Amino acid sequence: MPAQSSRHPVRLVMVTGSGRSGTSTAAGVLKRLGLHLPQPEKPADDANPRGFYETQWVVDFHKSLLKPIAVRTGDSRPRAAQLAAEAAARPKVVKDLREWLAGQLDHPQVVIKDPRAFWVNDLWRSVAEELGVELRYLTMLRHPLEVAKSRDNAFLSDRTTEFRRQRETSNVAAWCNVAFESERATRQGTRCFLRYSDLVADWRSAMRSVGQQLDLEFDADLSPGEPHEIDSFVDPGLYRSQVGPDDMDVPDDLRSSAERVWNIMNLLVEDPHDSHAIEQLSVMRAEYGRMHDFAVAIALDDITAQHVETRARTGRKLGRRHRRELRRLRAEVDETQDEKAPDNGGPRSWWTRTRRMGPQRP
Figure 1 (cartoon, rainbow, N blue to C red):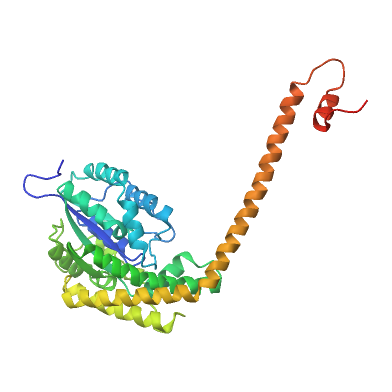
Figure 2: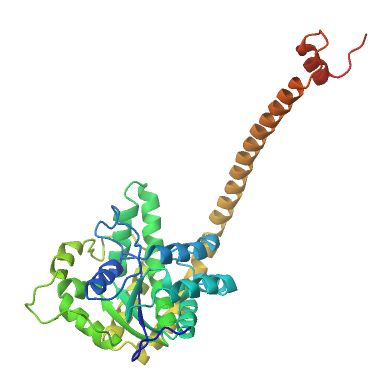
């Protein structure tokens, strides 16, 4: 049943963008400006001590879709979007989202935040249309090297230097892929793009622009000088992990491509449907696909060797587990057989010994 008030349909704002790009801050601001964030929320942790502002059901729902197909929140593979779309098209998946979302529309403006959401945007859009909900998109932008460095600081501090270097490179590539796919996923809708640096520098000005582009109503005066609790929530000190061009060991070709994509995405801040920027992103997406193919080809022997090693290691582990289980079952059988052994005056060990060794010669 469509969820509509007497005058306006419910407006559902999807906050998305690359992980560590300020999506939590943006969702936290929208919540404090009167938008409803469905509860319960994912609890804060050391990686995000001020809170994620992610509805726990949504996080679990997306994880249940993406984990079985090994699509990461930030995934560098060009085919990741197609894998996610296929997983999200299953009837049960559509039914689960429809039933949950239908129960969250008692408020005129709802905010959902999860950096994974763009992977399955077609699913959200079709369900929203079915329920009569107006879907809006707020995509957060942060420089790819800053995102990679932030992820490194948050999740990789205890890993080896080699692994961190590899993951930083992968995260810069994933930033590019996420930029391409999130832009394509939201192209047909009402959307806006917001730089994290702009939000932190002047949240009032940033949110006035967001409100105008997405046609949102806030329950606060955004005039300069008017105090608000968001003043203490949006702390400029949160804007860490700023890096220079030489602060990370990333391949030059990838670094150059990421910088170009960053510059093009910034054009969408002023005009979310800039046709020239969209055309350039399409060209860059094709170039990135070729770069990714070449990278896979270069690493093919290493990937193959890892698969062989993984299969061998798994086989050894399963073999050990099988042998342990077999010994356990034999012990259970022995114990059961001993309990059922005839008590005819002879020692029970005679029964066990003859059963194990077979008939004895006279």
